[in-house]
Length: 63
Image 1 (cartoon, rainbow, N blue to C red):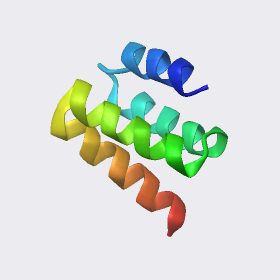
Image 2 (image 1 turned 135 degrees about the vertical axis):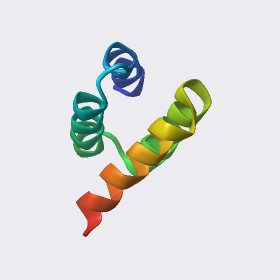
Image 3 (image 1 turned 180 degrees about the horizontal axis):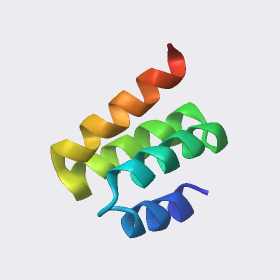
């Protein structure tokens, strides 16, 4: 499932709104370790802007 989400997120990289929405959906399907791996992958592949977006999306879920 993690690899599938990476492919989906690559396709949404030019649309921050849809990207954030997909991160929220991903957090429902992935376990904590996979979410951490996804965050590291986003940070490596897409830079700090998207890693910040991922952090904000995940924080909004825990609030």
